[in-house]
Length: 262
Image (cartoon, rainbow, N blue to C red):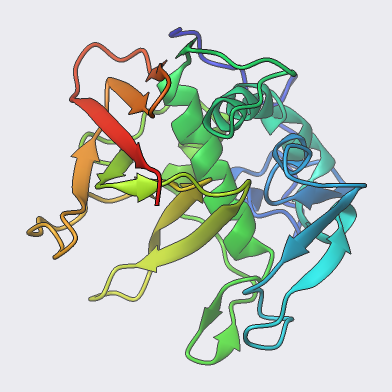
């Protein structure tokens, strides 16, 4: 539950900064780059049908357009092979997390899943970096190009640094209808600095916020939605069953989600 995946590239520092790798500030790159799925390939495999996905909202699509694409389309050369390989161990934890929420975990349905929440947070940070570095985020009517994550983010991904207190995973509570297998991702900016600081994930109707700075305190929305920081347990209730997702940290709220039928 608490074991940290080793994401430090093996061997001695290379001293090389690959210009196409978003981790180049660490000066520990390989000379080759690889096509990185900015949403992990194993996650996309839970959603595709006949090897294809339906996507919308990308800057290379017309507003409102939906398009069937191959999974390989959602790749970008944003990491060198050395750093890409080092982060691959995070995907196995994330696919269990997503599989549980969409009711598909290696072909079986689980009522209880114990998962390493700290590694889910690091996977979300990896995804945040990949989505922005891939050029799929628009700001001021233009796609962001040449973006580099803050050094602190790289130290969390590739070294032993921890995500600061108050940052990380939040659940957006409220009453939600279970959605068809669908994932929605949006970046969030600091309204003062304009810097990208967070990502929202809506996984089959279950909404999460991953933030690299503490969100401002806000009153609940008119629908009753509000943030719950570091949920210890997410209990999902439907008409016929109850299932629980345990994140493994010692403190945090017990969040109950009731799935509406309409």
